[in-house]
Image (cartoon, rainbow, N blue to C red; front, side, top):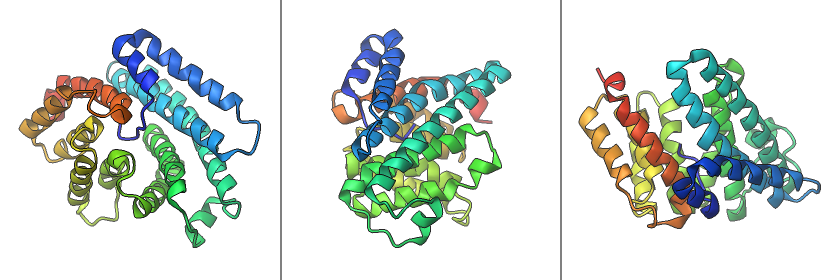
Length: 269
């Protein structure tokens, strides 16, 4: 839920014509992928971005809801989402390799002293988003769980370069990543809270996705029901016109906030 850079057209349809929004974004994905006939890093960046957005917004959201009522159908949707994220990862890796030809294997990325620049930030972010999606939709498969440090590597590299990028989107993504880390020695909540506060600062409080992510990942773990409800209601009442760059993510976050509120009794005991 935290991985977003908006598409104004898709946001408009999702807000005003939700029945068409999925088809419109999927058509954008296919169109972007048809353009991958040359070694143009920007084309691969657009492909990883759109496919990752589409998979989070529609396949993952459906799977998260369906798994509660129909386990097999939900599991199949997660498998579909994982396959889609794998395609996104392929696009994202190719995009960065075109910019940095020495990075042909993932181990090279971590072992080499690579100098990334400000222009690399969206490439790092979207590949990190795709990896994060693959890990979460793998439903605990070891092949993917062991790749969690890759998400951290990509997002932390991006943070080092431009922590304010896209209204604090990287900090927003770091909320769920911080809660998933096993190396923080019990400081997960502290780290996630720090990133949440920075996401709010850099977005001027307009990032609904960060609010929903913090409520779902942190406040549920702390069993703070009242704060959970309050934060999700804040997300529901946000003005979507405050930041056009966050519009798509905020619309998806609002729908997730409604769903999470409906599950309050299941999440708290």
